[in-house]
Image (cartoon, rainbow, N blue to C red):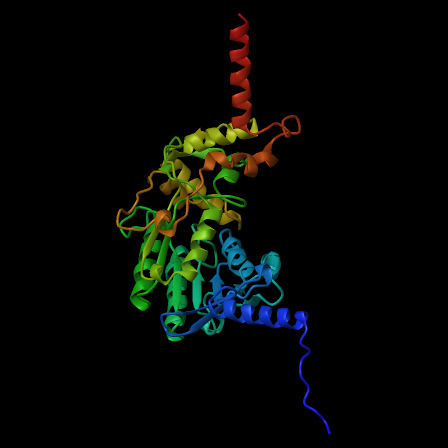
Length: 383
């Protein structure tokens, strides 16, 4: 007669059973996984595990192949979120594939004027980021096409599929009455997306510095010769990594919905002061020639029409005369529990490649200054 099998009463079996029970208990309490409910009632399951974690969110990042896009894609994909990356150029998106585990980054071809491609990119997502923007016109798109009409199409697709969250990247100084067309279009885009999707989170970053930026690298480049306002423009430069952290935090905090954020650095600089930081770090002195805007604007406009890559434009000359203004009603990094970095602490990291071979191995400018001070103090003490 067959007898029913019973587990051996061994110490190892009891230990294994106890461990399984503890794992299930920890899992149910959120120790290894977590379940949250979005504003539309969709469950989000998060499981720990580093690069192979399950972030729960499915995020679409329009403009992911641009400057700021790679930082938010990396933040989300490395947490285990599925990130949909709409792209136009095959070679522009390949570096994003390795930002997450296998299958976490999904590429979809799209076009700003093709509404079905936009809808296909957002239909399965629970958060959509719009980082698409242009601060100079091209032969295919002007500022109105990209900053206003493009944002409108994306917001309509988000509203159509009732996506939980929509984060729209605007700009500092967004103002309908601004003398700059770029700032005017950014302000109109804010109104358009809020009218279509009222829960839109609007982000207004200050001029951003980091790898591939248009601030430090532009000042260090040999093509940066002309200015129109003696480099008097004043603003609070912000680090690209801090922007990426803020955008990733918004995905997990539904309290950021319907809010407007002004993201700027801890210290205000003039463009001349930043140029001085660049010269000191690169151990070079770049001369800048100041021209009247009546002369420089037509020159910049013609230059922008002749070449296809971004160097300057008539509107960029106009923006040299507009200082950054902070909206006192908007939220900041402090509301996201993020401490922004100061540009002076990162110039060596981003500008060392602009040094000549004679000075390439020198320490950062701040370290050299400290050594010089100690040397002179030592000489005085000997006397």
